[in-house]
Image (tube, rainbow, N blue to C red):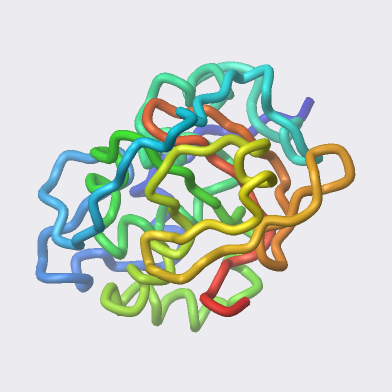
Length: 214
């Protein structure tokens, strides 16, 4: 199994050439928390099914790329709130940078029960470096895009597939098709590793950045 070094959110942001100090109103939030969050997010609610998964419930072709041990492993992520857990996942370094730029790290960590569709690094690379840097400097535009990747209830793959579509925190719906064995899709994005448990969210790593109407 391939392993990756732990990537801290601050190192990722530096590598991506993002100056978070230029974002928002000067009060930045990292994925691991610690400063006051400035971006608002709608209140989340518990679903009728709690949507909580175990590490043994994960599925998908990229699950084997997650480290076998340490904070970035499935077991390590399970005990941390979602933004902190993502900061330790080697597949999600660009997402961590985007969450920090939009000042959403503390907000995501404080939610009680959510579902997160997490684009892996190549999905952000596909946007192009210039567009990614521009979004990082424009939290007002970036935050709704990230909110479109979050559901206000915690759901596992079975619940999502049964529902067929769900409303995101951004307000628009995402459509869920396929299944765990043949391939689960969120809009046009493939689920690369699903049912990842974190302290307050169930996470699905996907291969595209979602936009409303995509």
